[in-house]
Image (cartoon, rainbow over all chains, first blue to last red; front, side, top):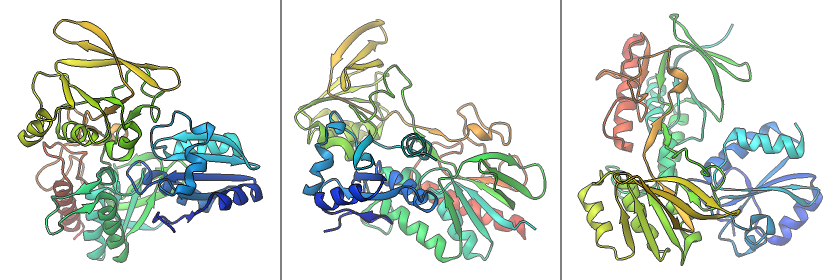
Length: 116
Length: 305
């Protein structure tokens, strides 16, 4: 069941996430709620989706039990702020952030890990 | 030839979106340029219960409705852009973005809003999302069974401190003055909560931990004595600062960096208006921003006639 109302495609199961990151070289997944720290990140992703064809952008609901795969990821240990944002390169976690990030911070991460 | 808009609005919070609704509905060609996410501070509010005519609504839902209203009247919105240059000197004003795009307009309405004021002390950036938060609604449940610190003495600080007691075993409010600025009902609510403790006339000096926030340093201002307090989290609610740094030499600002406007929301520059959290005023509410956005839009319309 979809829980997020964004302009981005929502991943609903851990299996779907696994398949998606294995089939795409560069993937950014924002795992959050419809809350004030998450919405700005979704907004940035929606804008970047039009500009960055080398990256696939997805969201996953933090309260979806299937999102445990992100919530409990070793890269998210110590995270105490929504959203948890994951950057996957060739199926592996390249980077992860906690809490709100702005356009500059996100594009900086995309440039570093996925190239311009 | 470049399109010249009737109105360009800088910012898409409550004031900017309202101005956009009014000007575009008045058939003035309108463009909103927004450096952040649409909705501004409105989306930081979990629930709005004092917007007349609406019993309760989530902040992002109200923002979304305003955005759709503006768009339905033909208002164009470009968000997540970065402005590099303003030219307000000529009759037709010009705004240039960092990507080189230029936009021209006969009038400008400045509604850049404000942002949560950081403490700007050691460790703040390091522990953001690892114990430091600016939103109790978003992150409160990460602190279930833990002890947290809340910094601030206004309505947000006290209301969020009470909200955090749903999760935390203890909430310590650290406030720099000997009295709170919050409304009486918020003070009473916090004071009677057994989980809340108060450290008055005190300020945080630093955040420390090992990958995760573990303690804060607090200075008691009258005695200048410093102490460490073990904590799992800190929520910062010390007000907002106007997003006007880039407007410093272009329009008159007061000592707090707020844009000086008259009752018609006119700045000291012809054809430039301002509204919302960025202007010189005492109360910052969605309703006041909406009212000022309306006035700015009507003043801009009158200027164009």
